[in-house]
Length: 271
View 1 (cartoon, rainbow, N blue to C red):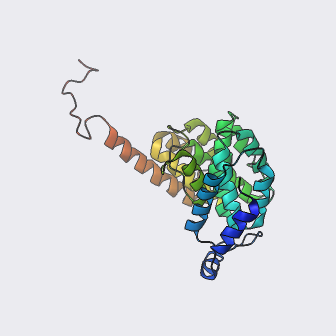
View 2 (spheres, one colour):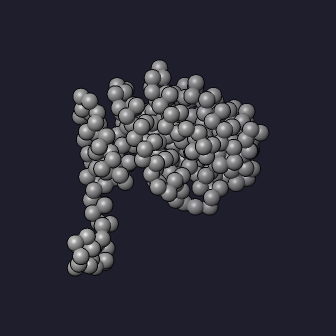
View 3 (cartoon, rainbow, N blue to C red):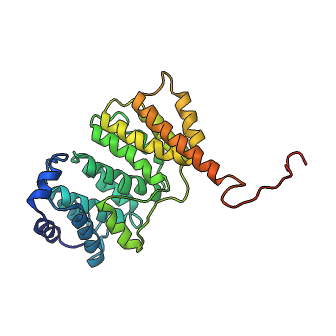
């Protein structure tokens, strides 16, 4: 990979006060905020990969140094690690373990969970749900959020955010997803393990993951909702119901007899 100092200097040169002021209203990472626009972070991430591809474990220390430099630098470090996951998933998990001790903002947390932790567990053939459920009682809520957001890697949805740029550059594709079909059982297990979490940020992640799963497997998510003793928190229930309704609507649209398919007049079950 490029020298961490080179990447940091580039991010600093692209920063501006207005962006720093605007983003600081929502982000206050202890590592500091440069004020580099999100689009520029993505470009630096992709260019850094293209210029000198990351290799693990060779570049692990350099990535850690970059992660510590500032918030934007950390997003690039996450992105470069994500692009290296297919070649070295277990070494990527070692970096995740180091960063779980440090990370303190939601933007970095979501990127780390979705782009590194989840994919590395899948690529390394680790017990996906079991590994994520182990953090259900972690004292840091941001670590619990990372574990929930990692479930997005087990759903066939396109990756998002500036850290995704390096992986897109590696694959030469704008739309990248980690799986072709939802890993329904694994995601349901994680949702059940975290459903009683009281932290609002973890609940927001639960809402997103559950809604996304419901859009693809509405009946399975509805079944989970009905099995939760004592019911769900109202906001979480409403979010999941939105996904269930959309999932059923999409399933109905894809059912035989739609999308230009003419159904048979004869019911094969009755002859």
